[in-house]
Image (cartoon, rainbow, N blue to C red; front, top):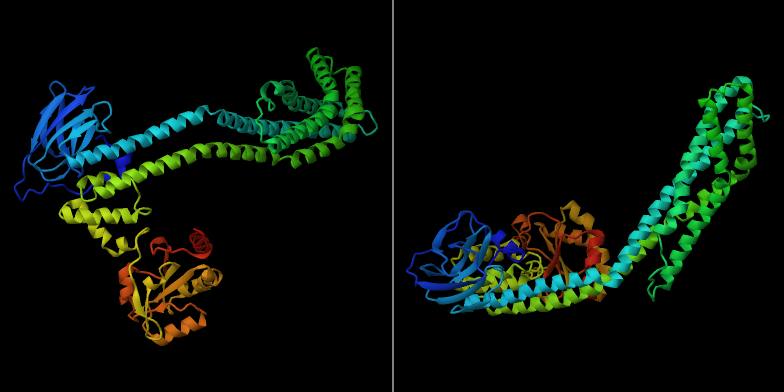
Amino acid sequence: MKYSKIFAILFAVMMINSFVIAQNTKTKTSTVQVNLENNTFKHVDLINSYGNERKVFASADIVNDQFTMNLDLENDIYRFDFGNDNYFLYVVKPGENVKLTLNAEDLQVVPAVTGSPSMTFVQEATRYTSRKKVVVDSLNAALQVDPKQVYWSRLAQNINFYTQTNDDVDNYISETYKSAESLAALCQQTAPSGKVKGSDMETFTTAATKALKDIDNNYRPFANYLENVGNYYNFTDGRESGHSDYYAKLDSYIQRVNARHQLAQNSLGSYMDKVQKLIADRDSLVYNDLMGQKKNANAWTARVIALVEQYVRPNMDKSAEFARQAEGQKSKGSELVTDAQQILRDVINVYQKQYNETDAYLNSKIIDLIKNNKDDIAALMFVDMFPREQNAALHEEVVRALHVTNPNHPIVKERWNILNSPAGKTSIGALAPELAFPDPDGNIRKLSDLRGKVVLIDFWASWCGPCRRESPNVRNVYAKYHDKGFEVFSVSLDRDANNWKKAIKDDKLVWPNHVSDLKYWSSEAAAIYGVRSIPSMFLLDREGRIVAKDLRGEALERAVKQLLEQ
């Protein structure tokens, strides 16, 4: 069976420093006859499926789309290597005579197998894993052409482009107003009486020309936008029923955009042709070397001053009004995009729900197969499809079963050791190990007595400053959620009973479950949980499984609240 993402985690774990097939005892020969459909391969090697070094155990040439191997190997997972990253995982079991059919175009499935319970298990499991891929591909294909998805994706994108374009246009309009105001200020400063002095003529014409060109250059993109916006943005076609509130909001936004642009067009556009005529006439005079004549210069500057008095000054208050309207609408476009994306997510969630339901069903079938074949080494090929943190019980069940049937297998031994280490026993998803230690009155309190409650195991000590600074938060969460089923089981690493009892009283740690063997860092409870620093916390669900570690502050309260609501 070909490597795939499905088995990536398995083989990442399976990479160890060396790999040696144990052959301390005589094994029975097994035979495998393989028929290849759609075959293009010429040769095959049977090699190790894990380990850093490639070890070849058997080889065969493929003749007439078939090959046979006789194998004196221990029960384990091997690999048929056809070259060029084409391979198939195969489980050898001594004494079996196996007939196997493979599809050379898809080495992730098993078309047919007889004579091997392990490979029959693999065949059934890969049938479900293949269906998972088919489901994903089919749902993705359907989603891509779903009319609602297409519509809302395009609408969100177009509104986003529309708002970005309008932001740019608003900037150009603002700059046009600023340039017009600069021209008005120039006239006020240089020609307060309505006429430019001869000594100021050259300075005025140079500055006025620049201001006029700035007005023209900044207004042109706005004029181009007004001419073409209708060709690029149409938000009325194809509207869907059931979203009247959204469309009302969209229409209001567009109306307000149009209103402020109409304001700018009325106040600025009314004299743009005159601005352009002034620029053209000045350029013509300069080109023909006529601007230096006093009569021409006076006539041109008089036209500039007249433009300012007739059109610019009367519309200067429109600049502030435009800015106010633009600022008021600044966030509306992004809100419309966000709302459209939320509707789009609702469409996608329909497909996601279908996928989740189908995937959960297929996963349940694969898990049932794994559990029914948990003592088969082939279970290692599939168990890592399910992350240990969310499926600790499944992993533990498989490892325990394989430890009985394959205790010397390197991967089984490794996982067995992890399972029985403090870190393994207290990993996320693991059933919390029992704690039974004396309370301040000498009575034994057991963690298991709190089963059915959401429990925080809190390792602390009276001498631990960070622990005691966190105590008020734990106290507050306890006060808020105790009546709803939350308990705290505090384990102290103190060595002085009086200091321990005083800290409980001083910090108002009112819950009854306080325990300690007063052995300081030799605490048996700390050893069981692998605690090497404090504060250290373990949050348990109602079944007694560890769901989180070392939560602090608001994160602890959120997690407790979520568990209690489940």
